[in-house]
Image (cartoon, rainbow, N blue to C red):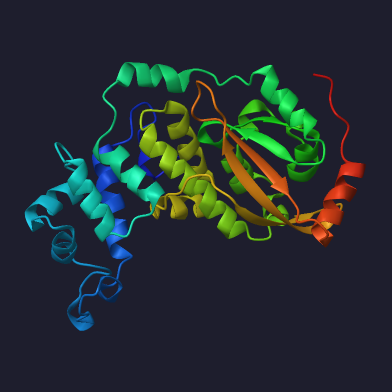
Length: 301
């Protein structure tokens, strides 16, 4: 198999290069800002690069050009939270992007404990599975690290796919979106779903740069999907959240469903419960009820 071209895939047995990640993230965020976005005059014909110049960003953040240049070159040693906050404000970062910037510039020092935690298998306690099963009219999945799908209920199988027929390593939202045979038919706004998936993986990568399974996942997707490579290089960052999804199901047709992502309390901070619901009285609600009646047989656990 060819080696993937993106950095995480080029370093399969090592940590991500946080200095390079910091540099590329800051460059990408600076490039998306125009002078008029931050109240500066635009002398466009003299600009050789898109977005703000380093000098302009440094001025907005209240730091020296030399200091900001060192940071953008990947040297985040000894940077203070006050400076990071100033740069985040100047770059108009979202909350998720601010957290990502902090993770890249000030990574955790407890590497041995950290690595032990991320290599430990995630277990779903029986109470959580009982909760999923009790939601007999609401599709729900339990998502773990790297967007692994760890548990689901009958309605989720009917809506998103029969996870019981998949190998454990295939039960991953990123793999399903980029490599699954039915993803582009299921998600009517596939590009938005793909961007969302990559953005969440990017945030996770900043939190856990030494996760070997994440590096392997990014490497595999980089090799097998040109779209993934392009989106990964864009350095978009976002946390799991809420919103709506437009789906086209082969049995009940098109549906617009609201989704919610809820952090699960407990020792594992990376478990998220994702639910899908239709607005009452809509055609989507009728379609979801019809899907519940047809459904799928529940396997013996």
